[in-house]
Length: 313
Image (tube, rainbow, N blue to C red; front, side, top):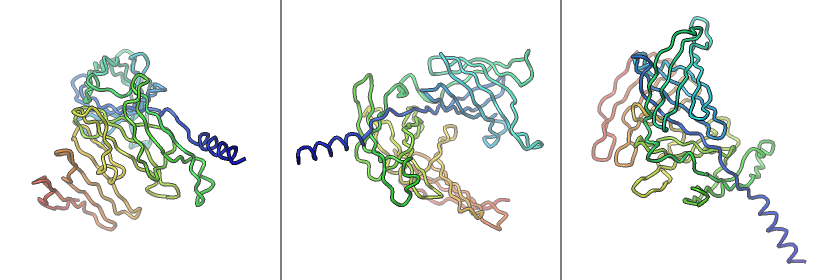
């Protein structure tokens, strides 16, 4: 009877643990021109569905004036529709489209066409900032092993969360890396986001994680940096502690944002040096204050050293 009971426990545990292949999203940055106009473009390519989302902006207009993109990548042919915000009408409108060829995972060549103009095209040439020919893990298999979480304090939502047990990476059906030391790491969708996190040209990856029961700040990431000299990924504890980090491949800066919901907001800008991120600038606005407060730092002897502070309207 005891043997039967033990076997049932083992069988139940095996049933609870679930190995699942992760969906992969590749974040690729491109730089180039539409006709003679320099642009910067960022695309998020969903490997399993060929769906593409992204944005671009004309350098002369600045990065705050981004145009939204959506389309499909199939057999090397990329079709994108663009939508820009019309301030007068207070809505997004379709303003143009791209027909591009994704050549050797290094460049996008083709044309841009203005909405409603069927006989007018502008030549588009873009180069990827990431070195995908040297290293492209989008064809790897990322496999989660997860266990459904039992959360007594949010029983209604517990069904959506899984406890991450392990993450394994396979190349040609051979396991190359395995990460197992996860503690209280909760996931939802089995998803991996490839992105160059330290701007060295190699794609790294991040794992979306969640904090059940929180109304604000309920998600973050675990970050894994690829080290070409070691030919492996290493989890980056500094990024993990920073939480949600945004990466600007053009300025080569990492950014964090905080807000309290009452008009007090801040953005911190970091740069990489010797494998670490250092604060180089901070912008803050406060409730009932018309000024933007700016603080500048320089990196000196492994530290962020205050340079100056100022405020602007």
